[in-house]
Image (cartoon, rainbow, N blue to C red; front, side):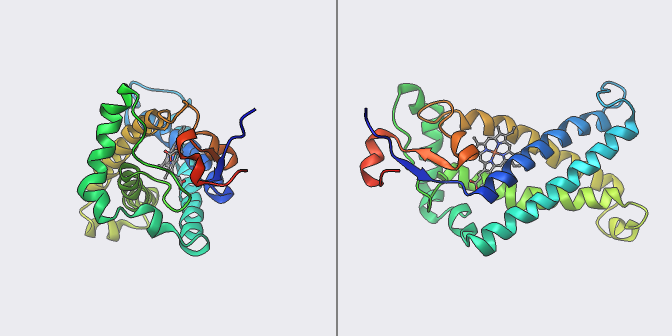
Length: 219
Ligand code: HEM
């Protein structure tokens, strides 16, 4: 039987962060819908219980985010290498990858990006994950924290433009997360098999596609 090649792609702290974060964000989206549209949606009984679950999930997401950030910055020291697109990515890589997802994938062409542990994201992933992880999560955590402590932090809230602006910003960023979630899960199924990208998020190892396997060692 043919031996398959694997690369170790996703270390355990990243996997723990990812699934804790996914559970937290999905909980935040569902409770958030009830909090935003209480007249139409009632999933968690009372309005109060939706709010306390929302606050708890927010705390879980912010703590797991700190774990992700410290791990990539201080332990793996690969945050900038993996997550910041280079000039080549911006000039042509993003377009090449988008063309693949929208068109060439359906013609059965191979993915133009070859994943390695040192360059595990394609240019589109880099750009999207950079915005999500280093802009949107910090913004939604800070706006959420201010909204959780309105009485205590009123002076700061006033300086930032008032409670209405804060609520709108928090809601708009939440909509971006909601949209990201669907696109993220759909694109994650476009590996050489539908679960090829899910497996390394579970046990860390990704199977190398046959025509790239000569470059890597056996596992
Ligand atoms: C049920 C929800 C989710 C599922 C099924 C899911 C699935 C996956 C899969 C299969 C991968 C590996 C392939 C890839 O890199 O694209 C991945 C990676 C990733 N996901 Fe998700 N995801 C979910 C929610 C989220 C959420 C809510 C966020 C952020 C707000 C997120 C951020 C990321 C990031 C940053 C990576 C790369 C991690 C790394 O290797 O450093 N995911 N996800």
